[in-house]
Amino acid sequence: MKAVRKAGERLAANVQVFDEQSYQDAQDVFRVANSWRDSHFLPMRSVYLSVRFRMLRAEISGNMAARPKRMASIRRKLRESSTKLDQMQDIGGCRAILDDIAGVRELMDRVQEKFPHTLRQQWPYIDAPKEDGYRSHHLVFHFSPRKKEHEAFEGRRVELQIRTRLQHSWATAVEAVSLFNGEDLKHHHGDKDWLRLFQLVSAEFAHVEGCPVGPGVPVRKDRILEIKDINNRLGAVAVLENIRTATHYAESFVYERGKYFLIVYHANHTVEVENYDHSIQVTARLAVIEREIAIGRMNAKAVVVEVDKVENLVKTYPNYFGDVSLFVRNLRRIIKGEDAQEYSLVPQQIVRPQPHDRPDPSLLIRRYRRWDV
Image 1 (tube, one colour):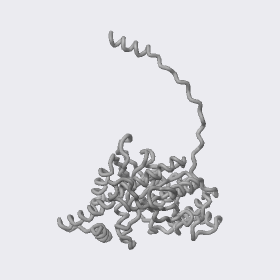
Image 2 (image 1 turned 90 degrees about the vertical axis):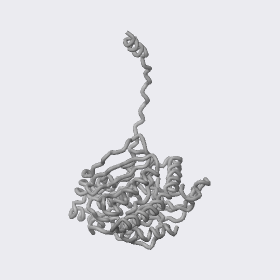
Image 3 (image 1 turned 60 degrees about the vertical axis):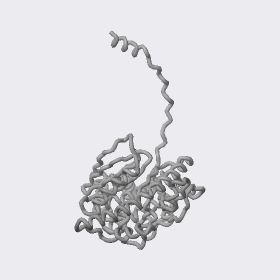
Image 4 (image 1 turned 120 degrees about the vertical axis):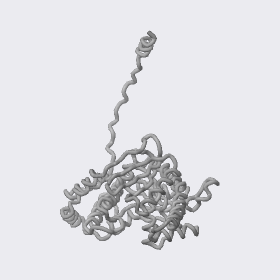
């Protein structure tokens, strides 16, 4: 743990490479930090499966995903706060994205009742939104091993975020605009009009979901007028449409294999995806890429995620693929004076099963006869 804390102190500062010795020192720092992060994979997966099981049992519609914290995000948090690397609560993170607010409330209750891991702390950002408009319910669990071979990971902290698709679309748009414009809106650094627009739109989303509206926003009539005014200045809808269509998605993985996905977002808005069967493989590859980024040899952002189905990859992490469709659709509605719409599935028409036709084996028999001849 002393080595972990020391590595965290080094990561908080600039890691500079001058010669072979300084390069080796940097390698050692990242080796310790990556090993500490890797030790959260098993606890993270355990929380992920436990939450997923409760969603399926309660028939709560939505998606689950898990991912370790990016090294760049770890370093920023170490620089900007007093948190030490060994005390960080969200190195391993899980996210449940549910269809509506009712599903969020249901899952919040279920993960606090007879859950296999110990709840350490929670932040109710849905009922008490942040000033910037961020809304999601966060819970931090201490990993409680059930097998003797897992006792080495006891006490590892895993964060669970529970949010609606509407809340997720807001967070997605913030990150997508940040990536596209080269700003850090998520941490309040960037264009003031964009920051204000997201704050006001979040209040509209909260109104639709019947949740408390965050601080610092006017009454509904005035905030809609302000949203229209900011959109006119920024051309926000047009910018979001450009983001939606300008990101290129390189499918470099095989759909039938792997459950861990390495997403690399390049400065030219090209996304590469690699898939892996085992956490050891993907963490080794991530460590190599992050070292290249840290020493300036690569201009990109990289993240590892785990999803239950490959088709949910873009749905769960749309910010890396420029998918801001739900947010921009609701922004258009707000500008028109209409309510934003919660995500909902259209009820499927029940169709009577088609009669089962028995194949005529004589066709196959004749074919074999023809071959015999």
